[in-house]
Image (tube, rainbow, N blue to C red; front, side):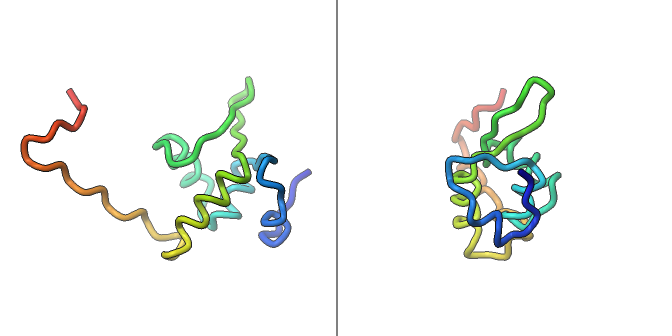
Length: 91
């Protein structure tokens, strides 16, 4: 069942799953941002054999709560630069 209203989506049980589009509505960002956040590890998802992403509603709600202290469409705060001599894990 596809829901397009933010109010309806916010009533979803945390153990249910959202599509990429539904996740974008809840987080008030574009679908490209949702896919980028999944690739960056900010959001986890399940993919079916065709590559369609499904996001656990509870995880989406938690991220929405985390983002609640700033405008949801704003870019994330910058990651602090590593201290001199600190290993970054990159080769």
